[in-house]
Every structure is written in C-alpha cells, then in structure tokens.
Length: 60
Image (cartoon, rainbow, N blue to C red):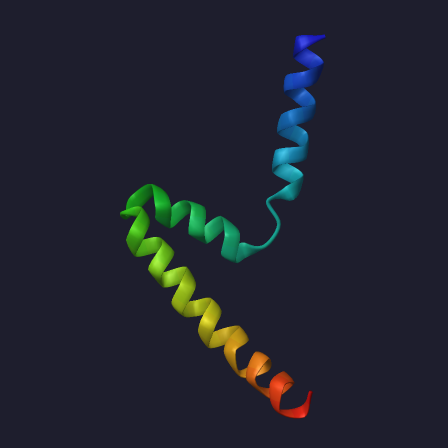
C-alpha cells in the first residue's frame, strides 16, 4: 500500500513538470542562490506577460 502511494506520488510529480522553463528554473535553483533565481524568473515573467497585460487594459 505504501509503495503504491509513493509510486503514484512520483508519477504525478513527474507528469506535472511540464515545460522547459520550469525545468531550467529547477536546475538553476540547484546551482545559484534562490533569490537570484526568483529575481530572474520575476523579470522574465514581467517582460513576457507585461506587454500582453498592458494591451489587455488598453483594449479592455
């Protein structure tokens, strides 16, 4: 019973690791300090999603 629970946990965990950016973030967090990685992710997210958010406000 415990083995099935552990196996199902890992199957779902691996299945939820989706895109390349998430895997790169995990890899960077192993190498660099957490706040450096978090700052980089925040800046990248702002650059990618910021213009779309801004245009959504403008054309509402």
